[in-house]
Image 1 (cartoon, rainbow, N blue to C red):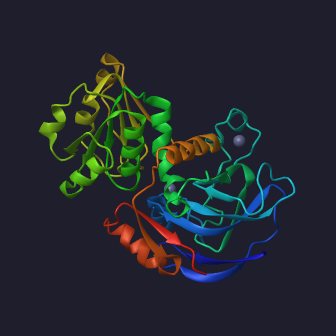
Image 2: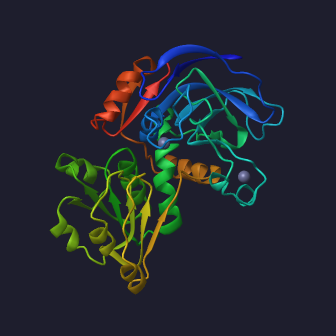
Length: 336
Ligand SMILES: [Zn+2]
Ligand SMILES: [Zn+2]
């Protein structure tokens, strides 16, 4: 397949239009995938609107890709034609730097973002480096698996790195990322608290596995949790009362940021020093982290709660995401 039908954004904040494109030369380490489903992540919207100043146009967005392999370069390893795979935020890395050689390909300084200077999954076909085409477990619900590939691993990785089943974990922001974080943390055995500004989400948060739900606008209720959490994962992209939030961390506790809030987070050194607290962040996850997350999700029957749109209604789906009304993650089904 040398051509693809793709939904193309020609400039920032413009509606996407269907185009037929030449995919160009097929690299020997590349894999070509016929897209079946692709999740819509908030980062797609941020790149469409050039919020981070790194977008490249024309852009083909979509980085929660589920599809079948239709072609393999001669040097693509460990995959087969027809195999169902997923592709997330990254679709390439140098494969020889210290980070790649130690398994942290997502920290490679040359890591290729799937939707920046590379064609993403809102298309009939897309290509990726073989290391980033992750085989999907047979028992996984493929139609719902897309959001696991970016949003899922983004919240799973900090749990795998920093939580134990005995941990008290707080998830800040119950949206696309946060609702998956609740499911993962609950399945892992943690005592899970959901923080949300929307009272309409209280019951659903409990349904996703939260043991406790707290309004993120209720400073008095949050203050009562002082010294409580071993791990807080923040998925929001708006500033919070960080002082009070950090105050809810137990000694050795950690605030882990995966929501791309643009405003700086002010931190009191004393609060970190005296309770030996940590603040950290992480981008998506390595190929092995994605594979581990998919295995865990399959074993515990974890899927995101989704709304489906045919890909031909992509602009409507983006508007729905932008409105903040999506519950909780949108998946576009290929209909070329
Ligand atoms: Zn994403
Ligand atoms: Zn590298």
